Length: 147
Image (cartoon, rainbow, N blue to C red; front, side, top):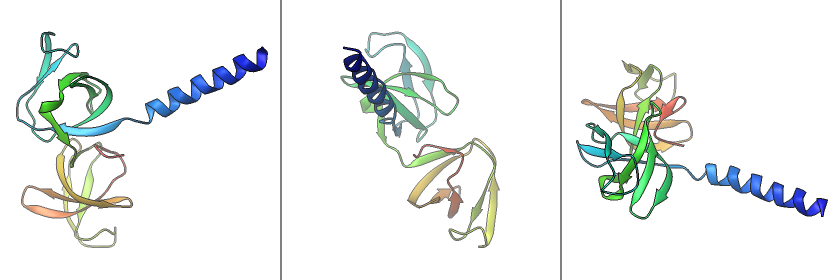
């Protein structure tokens, strides 16, 4: 009987760890998106996002709603129609944009922490991004919006 409880406990613990790793990112589809207290259109609005393309981590879902958190740890429920596949990131520290995917290539500009960047493609520890009128590569350590 003791073995049963140990095995059951291990299965329960492992399933919780696996479930936590199923989080993924989506981004805002529109410039104005309501975040609600619960997963229903009748639930009260908690706050409103006003930043198109902002990446959000999905941590739960219920029917057509997704429970999200942002890079500042704000959270709530958003209808799936307001979200789309994530192709953006937010810098969690100052970063340099390089011409190529190497720290030895030409630096183009320094972005401040909190900057929203659109992703063209990613490989290994680098993403090619578009921001303002520039295009180049940044390292992906300490960014929000990609795994």
